[in-house]
Amino acid sequence: MAADGHRHDLVIIGGGVGGLVTASVAGQLGLDVVLIEREPALGGDCLHYGCVPSKSLIRAAEVAHLARNAGDFGVRVDGVTTDLGAVMDRVRSVIERIQVHDDPERFRGYGVDVRFGTARFLDPHTVEVEGERISGRRFVIATGSRPAAPPVPGLDNVDYLTNETVFKQRSLPPRLAVMGGGPIGLELAQAFARLGSTVTLVEMADRILIREDPELTGELAAALRQEGLTIHTGTQVERVSRQGDVVTLQCRGTDGEQLIEADALLVAAGRKPNVEALELERAGVETGRGGIVVDARMRTSAKHIFACGDVCGPYPFTHMAEYQAGIIIANAIFRFPKKADYRVAPWVTYTAPELAHVGLTEQAARERGLDVEVARFRFGDVDRALAEGNERGLAKLVVSKGRLVGASLLGPHAGELIHELVLAMQAKIKVSHISAAIHAYPTLAQVHRRAVNSLYSPRLFAPRTRGLVHWINRLLP
Image (cartoon, rainbow, N blue to C red):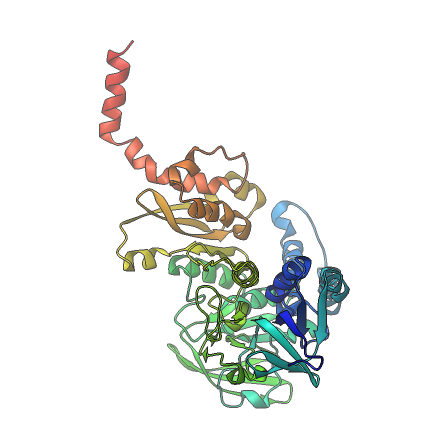
């Protein structure tokens, strides 16, 4: 029990988006809530090391890229240089502006008791924080994840960057090596390349973004290579070493052995859930390879303890943590049995062009035995994309029985455009409604309507239809 014998209604461990959403709602509903965060500030990985700083960096890199290529638009820009220190200062300023929304005093105003320190379970209903015992009727674990270091010989003896340290860089490395062809690795690799580094990326799998549609990842890899990135897929890093200021990666791949030399190394080879310090075995909470094991109601093996976000998966995205927090609010606060449903869960890789996805890929749909049609339309055939000089990419819609079961967009602002398709899937409307909806001209969103229409064109202009039209116009007045 707590030192004063009091048992709180809800104890939340973790001050990222999942914990903050839950604390905000519970506190404003009048529950007795304690929020515990081990870092000295709220906001979690997304605000301090992930989504916010990376997108701010990507924007700066985009500006540099546009300036260098301004001649393509008839605009002359001379002497483009990059001051990485100034770039990182802006990144920090964006974080600080958003940090205001995660001010502990704001949550204390909701009635939430905000504590800072590392929590560990003593028993199923008690945690200890900075020597103080805190007891609760129900718990929410939202402690997130951290970068995972692959078991590569020599890596521990080399100072390398991760998403938690890269935003502290003040000077641009002339040569940057990146281990990992997932979203984090690709986004940061392209950003540094656009800012002026020579970037080499190594991915162990046979292609980048292994969970995405291979047709689109192939196009994205080609686009990145055209910008100057060197990408080695199907390549294993066997050893890492440093001599002086040079980091060397000894690799083996389809092209045999090769040495990659760089001035800095960024490791983006997966994530690891933050569970060790919690001593979950004392609470009877089961863990697995992906972190804390939860059911569809986000309950752990100890049913009064819930978990959300990266610490339990299955998707390491901020918006999924927020969604799961809503499931917990329904179950733990309102006692309404609600289950998580990931069938219509979108995600985005913020490269240029962006790659957005929802639902099933073509391959996954066929493996499930679905009878599917695939609609494709290139951004290069959308007038707005041509006007903006952003014609790279492809919209790919997977349709079964007239309804959308999945979509992948590779193109400008794909992360914004995907939501029309998310809503179509969520509402289970027929793709004909997308075609019938009036899309403003000229917009990038026309790619959806044009893609759907590509399914209908062969039927519309088929000989049978042509004959019918001929008969109607000859025989009817």
